[in-house]
Image 1 (cartoon, rainbow, N blue to C red):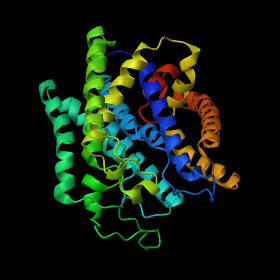
Image 2 (cartoon, rainbow, N blue to C red; image 1 turned 60 degrees about the horizontal axis):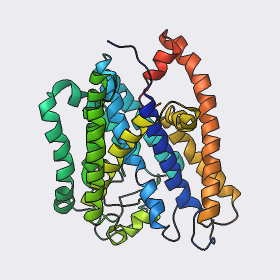
Image 3 (cartoon, one colour; image 1 turned 120 degrees about the vertical axis):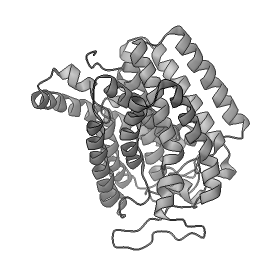
Length: 366
């Protein structure tokens, strides 16, 4: 069994996901084409399409990296119980964010932390129980089943949200059940999002077994990534007319996730994976690595950051000033991440009795 070490490519992918997440969530709160209106948690007018394209890659990257890290943990000897414990902790964090930030009843709309929580044990079982030949058909099956389930079970224009006092947030004509939200039409349901985590598990196991990406692996990633991205574009992605406007106004870009979006997102993830593998070690990549070393902490931290930034602005911003504010906010988050890592390292080392670098390499979502 190899010692636990950090994979710089994985950290960079998580760093890109953090940047895209802040871009999307903070942009919803502060952007307006005319620079008018009060900052808040819902859009007043759709942003430029290219901004949504970038923000929309965040959940696919987070779930893909989750799968990669579960595969690494399994190869290092982690048991299923470890992922079950982490699942429980993520459920608690997700529920707390629902109550404190969104002020809604938890476990109803299936935010991304709930999906990641479910993916942890599923990915462990996936890499530990299934033979290699059976993994790809299951990954493809999850993605292929998504449009069929959207058609058969229905896809609500907006998930069923209840305030913590029991008031329905938004009543839509095609409302579906909360069970349906977990399967297909919540914010981040099992289909298709767990498919990204399973894909990460397949490639993570491959990366661990080969110790480093081979030239053949990189060529396949680039060819498949480019092909899937072009296929997504050919299928009409991005298609503004296919979006649920109610979800878009709450920050849900490209929902429902149609075949074009899924294809383009898988392609983008594979291309980013190959790109990050080719970036040589240098200080230029350190900011992304830093953001990628504490994704869960930054996920939690970016919610109060949105509150603070929105409260400091007297009105919404146009695209140029908005980008400047988002860049400054990311710099603040990077500083917070650096401080958190400095504090966390010695604490975990004392608790686990293992060297700090080994403990750091063992983190999946911290």
